[in-house]
Picture (cartoon, rainbow, N blue to C red):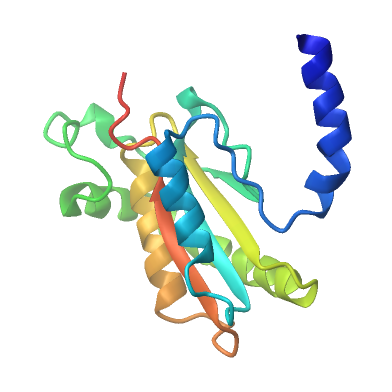
Length: 178
C-alpha cells in the first residue's frame, strides 16, 4: 500500500507544482471541504488574488496547503491566564491581551510588509491564491487573534489597494482542544 501511495504522489508531483491552489483535506470533514472550496471559488473571477489567512495549532500539525507559515508562539500565551483560558482569539479580552503583548505590533507591521511583497509577486506571476498560515500551540488564542488582526489590516488598507484582493480567515483548529 505504501508503494502505491508513493507512486501516486510521484505521478501527481508535476500537477501539484503547477497548481494555483492546493487544499489539504486530510483534517476536513465533507462539510468543511465543501465550505473551503466554495470560499475559494464563489464569484471571485475578477479578483487579482484570493487570500486565505489560516490559524492553526502546531500540536495538530502544519497545514499542507500553506504558502507561508508564521509562528506566533513567541507571544505571551493567554492559556496560562485563568480568566482567558476558556475564551479564544475571537473574544475581545483575548485579542486585547495578544495584541498588547511585547513586540506584537512590530511583528504585525513587518508581516504586513512581507505579505505585500509576496502578494505582489503572486499577482505578477498570475497566481490567484495565497494561503498564509499563522500558528500557535493549540490554535485557540494567539494564532486566532493574530489572524483576525491581519485580516482586518488587509481589508482596511495596504499598499496593494490598486488590486482587487479577496480575503478571508479560516480557523482550522478552533474548537478542537484535546
